[in-house]
Image (cartoon, rainbow, N blue to C red; front, side):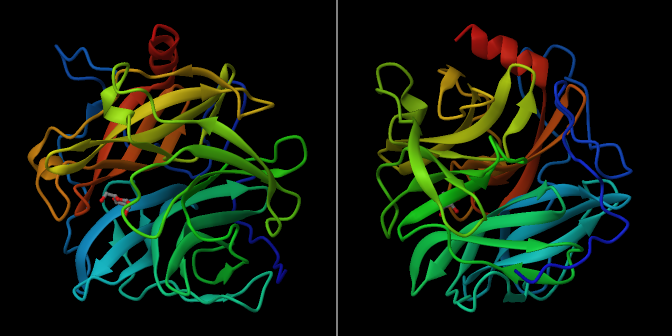
Length: 343
Ligand code: BMA
């Protein structure tokens, strides 16, 4: 691996168990209290969408993107499809987590732990700090077929790409933010080459971010009689949040309707030491397409969470809306856990 020295601006840890929380950057996370009269566990930012589809000159859409605390603000990896509708990922920076400057050129990767960094497309990035660097995963086109790409950066300027984690076909690769029992851990969702009509969440381990194994089933879709919004396929969303009660995993769930797929957001609590064990799981959704920017866009009716910023009990979720733009939603971690325990 082409390791480099960590520069001085890196936080020593983004996650502070047992009270869950990212400390990281110098800025407070974007946050608004629950509006008066609102009974929901999760509520939206009024200024949504916070990132418009035409945020950079080349973009047709900006959605399904990842953010992390960085320096005295935030950095992110953004999915920007261009006006040919080619999918790629771009770095971006923000002081407040709401107003973003996204680079106009896609991320250029150098060789990390491999010479083979072929990629026909990149989409749906996730990003987290582990030990000494920021790791990025995404859906990577290997010879035109989707699998999980992995890369890292120390500074969001120079990026290194590693071996793909799995064989095609796979999507929604989401790392845990620390090693579990000495090994890296990643959630993923084996798929097919198209708009996959099935999908379970699996967990895999690696000693070195190159070789992945010990694959374990985490969760399947639900029977539609029990919870129809997640009865077709499910996939992990943001980096799981460490809490004293377990790993809080936000995920997307999909139902097939007469108009196509509808994507909503739920949550589950996974065992801290053995995260393929599900302790609690949402039967109701947390957030489902309901606003104009979630209901109308290039793919209508999509809420697709890819990142979470935490500070104490506060949690701010970033999600792609209708495959077109980016929204934010807020929740309190303790309330989500109490709600999950009642499901
Ligand atoms: C999935 C991915 C996501 C997208 C979603 C809804 O298969 O392509 O990028 O948001 O479908 O269209």
